[in-house]
Length: 104
Picture 1: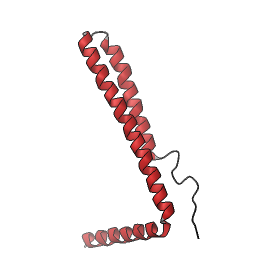
Picture 2: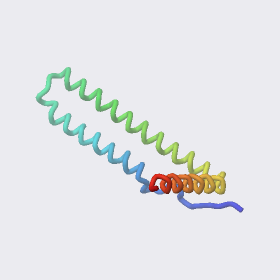
Picture 3: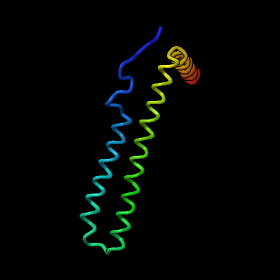
Picture 4: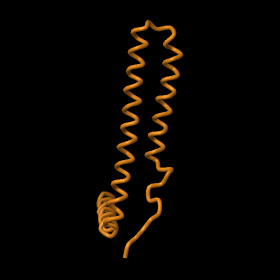
């Protein structure tokens, strides 16, 4: 019996929202840099642009890694659904036992 979950990776996942928010912060920093760069010497402007480009590349790389990790997790869960559920159950049971022993 094969389990199939359509769109296991949601379009509105929190990781993607985090990366998108990070890209918005970079865009805002870019706009701020352009506004503030008019008062800076050309060397500082070039340095700021270089740093912003590195940040943009890092954001793109992080987003690519997040998507690749989510796809790999999706494939693994589809390949081993019962084993994954068993491991999740065991980890939940262990966390519950630890919480009970700490409470006493």
